[in-house]
Length: 450
DNA sequence: TCTGGGGTCCTAGGACCC
DNA sequence: TCTGGGGTCCTAGGACCC
Image 1 (cartoon, rainbow, N blue to C red):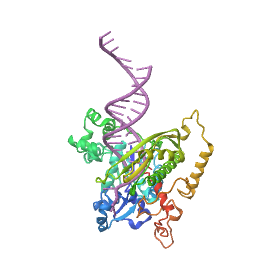
Image 2 (cartoon, protein in one colour; image 1 turned 90 degrees about the horizontal axis):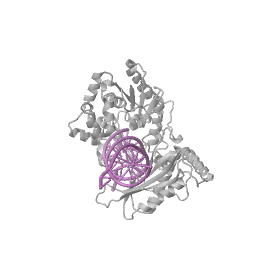
Image 3 (cartoon, rainbow, N blue to C red; image 1 turned 30 degrees about the vertical axis):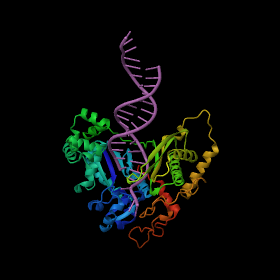
Image 4 (cartoon, chains in turn orange, red, green; image 1 turned 180 degrees about the horizontal axis):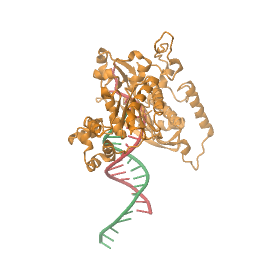
């Protein structure tokens, strides 16, 4: 059996841990630039806030409905995720961290009749030790565990835990799950299946293998088999090395001139290179893209990208920076209002596995220099030391107006507890300072894949 | 005025190899 | 005159996930 543990409304729950006053109230968390809704508390879901709702369009309604707002604080969420995952991994010999808020456990070998109690124990422990509420779904395959987790969340009687155990439970679960609520079947395939008259997971699981293979590929067939109880997806316990690294942002306002874009792409290159070195990797290629605002259809649209190989593979900020600027020069066209840019590092491999070059010797002073910069930035904050040619771009990044403090990762933000308090009080000495150094820390970590 | 960011896997088709 | 079989690599696009 597999268990899937999923943190309930994770980003909202992280905010609530340190501000208990948010408990029981409708709360939403917004994406970068305070653009869209990316997390909702149950109360917010109940009054009709949808995932992806555009904030500026619904602002007034949200205010009227008394919905509380937070900007996303990935530094906090990443750290809380780490805490939750390390607790979960003590509950089974094998665990797979699937995303920032989800974890699969391998429960094979556990006594079947004790699984539900065990799952309740998991919920209690995580809640007590971190403050984060979680739900547990249990099934014979990962896909069924996912499905069980949905039931655990929705069904009040389940109290956060559901185990698909008997044939009758399986049939019931499949009957009551809409086709697009199956893990691995998205909007497109769902629509196509609906057109075939298939509405539920039960209907999908009964389809002929040949038809599924032909119309949905091997991934579709795997999903069907998993729903029938055949394991096709095993637990992925090793964190796989990344294949690519991406840093991209939409701008708070559009940008026309080359110099501003130059500085932004430089910043992205620096951030991407730092991520690369953090993972002890090198990149064999990189790609830069720029695009105008696709929502402004009355404006001329332009979008372009270009890829460049890097030989030998590198993780040097200088070299990545230089290549990125070359590409930007190639793809930039004057006269457009740019709204988004990004850099992708490709063909990654572990630094120690980098192929040697016959006619290339690394200058050891370079790597020492980069290493020293990384140490300084780690100690004093990102951007404390940087290349002289790298101007800090200003004004392109819309402020996150409602961001909570970095409660768990910044000394200045650690909550104070006093004898009079019943619970943690957030330290209000430093809310949003507008301090560039502090704000900057946020720009680095937008990883949602943990 | 304002509309997120970061990933993975699979497939088909072209180009090429022996 | 006609003409086999087996393979790799690359890329773009589509689909999915959180």
